[in-house]
Length: 208
Image (cartoon, rainbow, N blue to C red; front, side, top):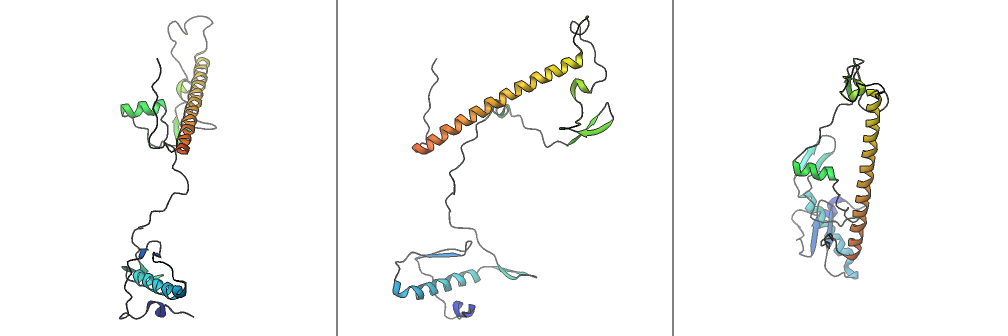
């Protein structure tokens, strides 16, 4: 059995750190860039492990009542490559672009429950049994001149539902357009990656 003392050695027999060894104590690794001598590989490996362990134990420590002595590891010095290519830049929707130009900030996280005046209770903001809002939450609606003040006029609550339905359809159309625009931008980005033109994209002026 190999003991830790045998690997570290005595304090007076310190092994000098070779210039060929590059250490990253955050990852507990040491890389020797010298050519490999197969006849002395065991001796060189033992020396490098000794240098690595001594470097680890020379780091600042802190005591933990359960774990004992802990070495405080420094920041990583190794830049690891990405596993996957970087994501394509996010395409801004027309509203996001407009809000950015005007400095409009999104609302903070809202409460899940809202107070409904008709029932006098707190109800969910969305989903089943959600609180009524808009014209649906009003027990009485003032008649509009030229709209609700003649025979055969559409019920204001019914008209409100129709307007809400049209608004939802319009919003769905916007979302589909934004998805198609984002998919087209992603496809263009992937083609640029394959051709090595990620940093420099070709711009085309719109023909009049």
